[in-house]
Image (tube, rainbow, N blue to C red; front, side, top):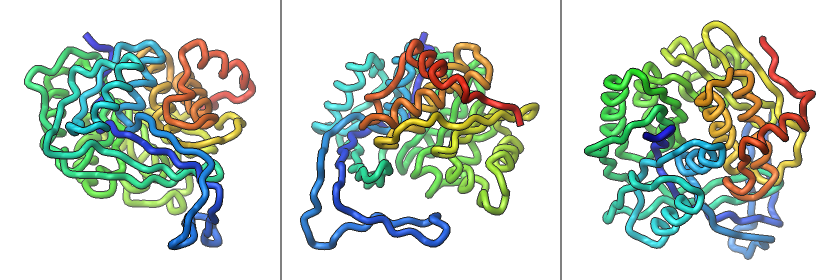
Length: 327
């Protein structure tokens, strides 16, 4: 039996560190554009490839924190697909449920890193997702980003949840799901034990804005009203909040140097999910999520800075003055 099965796309990220670019923003710094000289050679300082994708990142993060984790994903019959399986196995993730799609290329992305922020060029292609004929026993599911064609698969997932009342489900919808299939995302919410999203994703799901709602707390309450039992919302360098219908907690981020933000949200999810899986309370889960996320943004790559449980506890102790508080 697995402790956790992550469900979603795995891909290969090509990271590029840009040295010469500009960022243009509106007066409120809400809409910014990365600007490169057109039809010219743009200097870079570094580039490398690594494993990516929400499901893969969280699988690696939860294994690092001690869970027996498998990933259910679909890859192509190409070099990127082979590399993904090699990297997953290297991190100790069970790849038994990774299926091979001979008709569709493996997903990939190009990550442009500049001044601590990242802009992602992402390749999506419709995939023929298949629910396994024999889904293995697991206590927890982490369901996250998938590409076009996932809707029937989600219906099978919901059927499985309805027949396995003891399983816990963490939902972290991906960019395609939120941009293109909001109805399907909302259909999943009543079957979700823990929803983990950032502020922008919460705004899209609720078709509102934080400016209108005033606070992330208001967004969290509206998400709970849609049937979710527990909500965690991350807000970049400002930290995160987590809540149930009874209580709301908030926590600031640690004052660490940001090198690259790729994988920060997945690292938070890994820490938060493992803490809750282990039976720890929400305040401790917030600390685990923040610690893991801050470790990852201090290095390049989504897995490089992932912490084990000893590392989580060490970072929490190092920044002991930053603690969750009830709202």
